[in-house]
Amino acid sequence: MEKTPSKCVEPKALRRTVQLENLANREGWRPMIHSPTGSKYVGYWHQNDKHGVGEYISRKDWMFSGYFDHNQPFKYGVSAFGKGRNMYDIQYRGEWKDGHFHGQGHLHFRNGSIFKGTFEYSKREGYGQMWYTNGSYYEGDWEHDLRHGMGFLVERSGNRYEGCFYKGRKHGRGVYFLLATGQYMNGIWDKDMCVSSIMADIPYRQTSCMPTEYTINEVKLDNEAGQVVDIVETTSFKVEDCTPCQNSPIINNDSSKAGMAVTINNTTSKLK
Image (cartoon, rainbow, N blue to C red; front, side, top):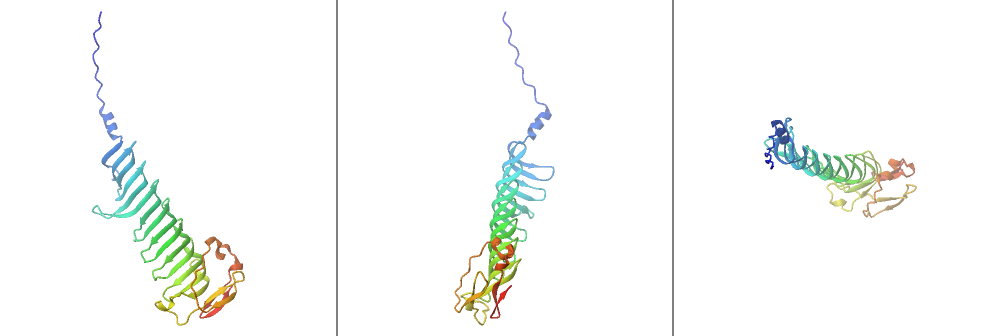
């Protein structure tokens, strides 16, 4: 006896709560989504996390546009501060990691200063250039957000320092160029103060703004004893290679090399 075929059973309709849960699971591209906190996001999602290319605007009108990795800015992106009427001032443009500036990038400070260089977890680290609002410019090494290592600083007046920096200050061996008088100081610095130096003329002294009336002869020293061994009548400008900060007698407290000759009012004396 043949059996009659069983009836085709249609699947039950999903309950309304299950439908809402499926709609709430964010996966792939989604248009603008407004959160209860007031922030907005448009872009890609993965397992309810912002993941991929997207644009996020916080409640305080801070914006990030770029790549996300599980809700954190990642790889490359641009952040900006809102200034009203959908207008923004760029804060940072460059590489990111775990929500921090990390790698190469440009940072714009709110006071107008600009930094271009390397970051490590939102701190200036390694080599970088800094343009200050007061007209100064620095290029060189950074560590923990401070000028640290070898670099040169051009001040607003045009005077220039080349040498060692330690925790944001001139510290160690360095050369300071006084462009207004056409002279330079080559010596040792301690916390932004020159404690021992030799002053000499730059070849273009007479073309400077306010050249000195008399030339200053270059003084040569015996490196070991720190005593004057020769005075050169015709100065030929030559900047000695700056030693790293850690080799400075100031930092290492090496008193045997701390004595140097300094010229003040055309009188040469030895500093102890």
